Each structure stands twice: as structure tokens, then as C-alpha cells.
Length: 230
Image (cartoon, rainbow, N blue to C red; front, side, top):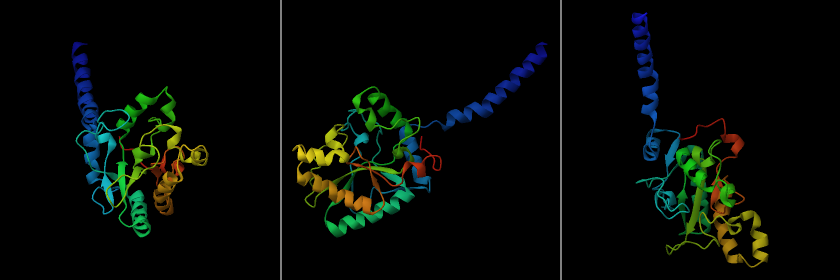
């Protein structure tokens, strides 16, 4: 009986070493997850593209959490399908507004970061601005971009509400009402339209409650067909 128990224990330990240890080895930090994108042919780094300025807000404390969620990471990646569309958007912006640049606030975001954001906003009025990580954000697939505009003088273009300004002022769907009430100016809406025309014209979709958020594909085309970056 004792010999049989020792044999069973030996087999169990062998199973643990073969199955569980690899599982732990696959665990990654946020920075490790992002670095792995460099060897994944499905994603494209756009940090150094002409007409782009990188200002990843979650790689600093200049965001609504006041916490650096990315660590020492300042590169921007998106899915290659989104990259093709973004290239067209940049070309369009260059033609209509020479000298303007698109500022990257956030691009591909690992789901581990999504959980951190979700835990901050759940149970608050801001909950609608952060996707439930259980199903994943379009950012987690690399198909979403949070962006702004910089003018030829290097000044951020006034959009009437800051990035991650989780208030009605941020919502494109409310712009006619906000203009009528004097809460947004025509100039601010016109500024939004500069960015919107370039992005939508290239095939992106504007999120209806965030002026800065654009999706390269509709959710139904992404969920279940592409892999989330954990």
C-alpha cells in the first residue's frame, strides 16, 4: 500500500511539473505582454510613423487613475488591419490640414490593464466609459485607438473636453444639444470634425460617447474571430 502511494505521488508530481509549471511560465507582466507584440506579425508598431505623436496616457500618471499602468513603455501598437486604415487616415489629414498630427493617447491595451480600469469605475457613473474586461475592450484586441490632434505649432487642438474626461461634454452623440446650450463652441466641434472626417473616411467608427475613441472594425467582426492580448 505504501509503495503504491509513493508511486501515485511520483506520478502526481510529474503531472504538476508538466502542466502547472508551464502555466506559471506563461504569466506575463504588462510590460512583458506589450514587448511580445514586437514578434507578433498580427500587430504593427506605429510610434514612429510620420504625422504621429506618442503621448500614452496610461504610461504616465496623467490619466484619470493617476497611476502609471504600463510601466516604462512608450510604444504604440495596433492590429495590422487597423494599421492599414490608420495609414489612410493620416494621408487624408495631411491633404486637408497640412502640418497637423495625430496624438496617440492609447492604442493596444492588454486586458490586465483593462481589469485595473474596470475595478476603478465599476459601480460609478463612469462605468459606461470602460468596457467590461470579461468580454474585453476593442483596445484589448488592438482594434481601438484613443487619439487627439496637434496643430502645426505643436499645440493640442481644443476638443471642448479632455481625454478621459468622463462627462457628457465628451460624447459626440450629444454635440448638437451641447452646442445649443453653449457648453461646446462651434469651433470645438469643428476641431473634432477634422479628426473625425480623417478617421471615419478611412473606415474607422467613432464611439458615440468618447470623442477620442475610434474602432477599426465593428465588435461583431472582432469578438470570437481575433485573440485578446492578455
